[in-house]
Image (cartoon, rainbow, N blue to C red; front, side):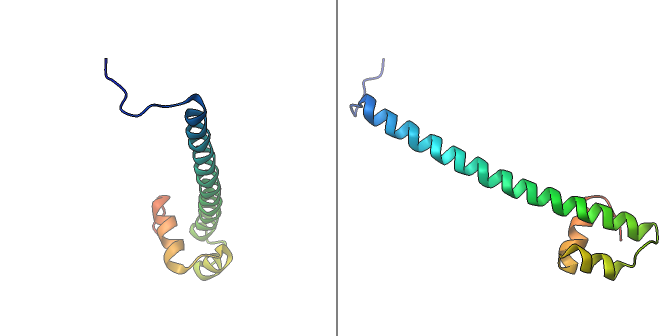
Length: 84
């Protein structure tokens, strides 16, 4: 059995547990927000790319409507499998 080099207290362990819990909750919340925003962007580009391919709207209008830069739009469309 390994001897503890630094003594701990229940109170100290509780503070560490609380700090780790807070960090984990903040990290999860941040990642959830990022995932939601990425999902919104991908859904929008997916719909707009489908409209471009079907000939319902021109490419420039789709890019403008997406609110993304031209490069971001093409990058997202490519990641989704569209070749525009």
